Image (cartoon, rainbow, N blue to C red; front, side):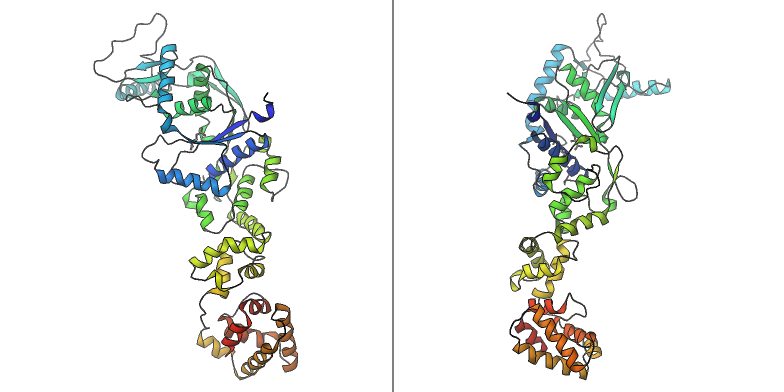
Length: 466
Ligand code: GLU
């Protein structure tokens, strides 16, 4: 016997448009978390009926994005293009049952009807010419014309639902046209496919962007006409850019996978996306398991969330700081190689330990790692001339001599050596620190010098000191 606990079925139903965008990823995350919270089923459905945009690459981009975020569907992916026979079957059934009808008006005729209504100060709409009514005689079928199929929408009453996010919503049925559900060539239209899929897939909760609110009463009416159980709907507000406009490419990267490329951790992305429009008290950092445990649609926000790149960086920095050195090294190695470094040429986990407290992205870690594993570029001769004077050379020579003899080549031992040299020669840190950095690393600034030299290795340090 099934309990109420495990009958929850949610779906993410993206239209493949070339990539998985942040808004879609967040909707997917909420649907996934809701299903997981209730021990239910999360379904992936690809709405690929727009043949111009739906390329295999665009579908793959969505699958990649979902996989990267760890949003594994329990069922699917299902493809609408593979379900055409089923949609046609349902259309036939509706025609037979009288909940749908053929309409032979041309698009121009429908436009003229709309124009006429507008001119009369009414809402532009299809005038019901072909809508069958008891006792009504329909016009003669124009020869050779292919009809569309329209849904016979109820004309009276209201269609209402209690939205999980927005609360009660009611639309007068008189506001809704008799929607076209099949085109003259027989292909089903968008809202119709969604309805048949939600029905067939036994979806219990639809969580989606609030750009779909207008579709909902139409979908509910068709579901009712089919005798289907209605899912519960929740419409999540849009994500806005930092300027308050709808988040778009103008605001920077909107494709999830671009964040992978830019060095964000999927865990950080999931955490940050979940907080965009959902909250659990004041918690900012939480694991995937906590999200699942805490996820409740009552805590979804009614108002639009704003994309905040600084906060995302803060969250990412947190996850970097709390990752293990070996895990970071594994994630950073290919980035080092892409930048021209050789990740094998150094102790990458040790480099991560040195850098991870200050890095906001994996790419920053990779750039920082180049100091230890990219071909050495000596400092600018002018800088060398400025800082490596006669006194500095004496200091460096003494450093090299004692470094050769150090029992342990560790950050602590090197720091202690530097300290003793400063005391011996009666100079302050910059006097030795800057020339040492310039000669050994080619840079004026580096992380803690003892740690840097320890990772570089005694051999390389002595070789560069000459
Ligand atoms: N395919 C639609 C979109 O990508 C979503 C449809 C739905 O969730 O009902 O916006």
